[in-house]
Length: 179
Image (tube, rainbow, N blue to C red; front, side):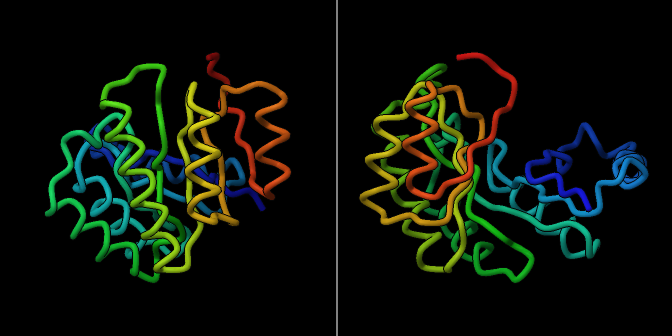
């Protein structure tokens, strides 16, 4: 059985053919899909959870991507805190740090990352992390948050970085992008 642990099929670009895309995934042997509800604003999280509610083979995550955390409002946090408790939500994420693009100020990224880790601990769920060119800071924040259940998605680090994550028991995802 295959599981796609990081799919972004909640967006409007899939509205016309989402069911066909999901059918092709199933035909290819993908039996479970985790939809990452963390694109732009909390509407992505809402859409991911809605997909998970209507399809027993789909699960969701909720957060705000590090690119967008500078725009977060208290209302965004309220949505994430509510949805993180949903039974179809299996993790908090995609959260983390992206120092490659720096679309949000680094301090805002670090603060949001720490707060999403607190949320994950509060609801007893793993963390899905987008870490790009920020591995030292990410490891420090993860350690401070006592994170034990984690996927490092979008890994662009060194072999030493991968070993450091593995030593903490984290999963590391090799996405195919370079640093």
